[in-house]
Length: 222
Image (cartoon, rainbow, N blue to C red; front, side, top):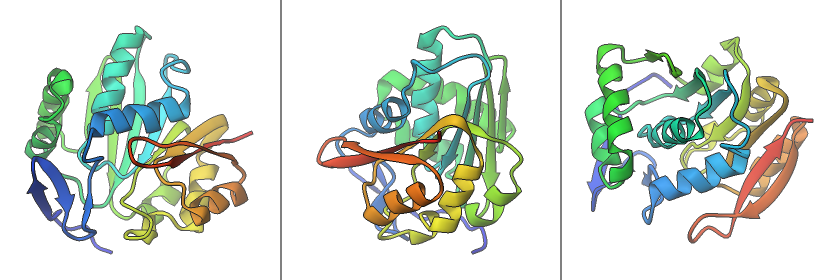
């Protein structure tokens, strides 16, 4: 699928993908979901160390980046944090700021990072952060990526509505780009996602989800 401009509908301040009819984050508390699923699900910030590497499927509004960057600052770990995100249809920096507006605690970091993205849309190079946005279909771009991650944020739209980002071949690529002892976390507990992660070599565990979601999935590479 070719890259195209995202189609976003704003409902009560929450960005909704009109293509997938799915919100970009939890309606109740997107920042809380990010912290519960992607930080705690990957054992963060306890695992942070200089040069820690995070990779993400589905950059969306950038909220995971903002929440993680704030946690990195609070941890006091020396930089840089390396954060790579794969995204077919990135939002504009202005849309990212609009999406982050309901979470005023993250406004300073969101403003700092979106300013950097205005200047260089696919990268941020700061003493404490090395961010790369890899545009395009992750099924094509991830196999070409030469990096590895200590932690994965699997944050595509719902598997039922966006199955292309949850297929077994792509999750096998996630495994191949995971460091020994690395982890992955996602809000979904869909059986086919858990089975694909297990088939790729992860030890998979179902945990309590965020808000109304009963379960989520975490995985660790032996």
